[in-house]
Length: 105
Image (tube, rainbow, N blue to C red; front, side, top):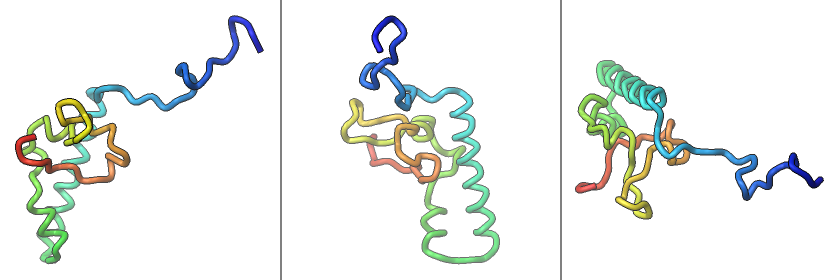
């Protein structure tokens, strides 16, 4: 079908998933709330008296209020310029723990 109203090809911005280049304020707020929720679960398990290796590893992670903004919203990436990329560009970023990064980055 030719003409002014033909469907645009995918290579020219058709039906693709678009990922914004930075997090919006509501998405940042949800990320902070997600981190606080995880901190609360870790603290509840610690208070219950259960001991296991995964709990020890979780207790070693920084809490949400101890993390700088750089670590809350970005992660280390070897291939990115500046060695950082937005956390929302990581696959399954809402389900993974991305609280620690290499020293110096």
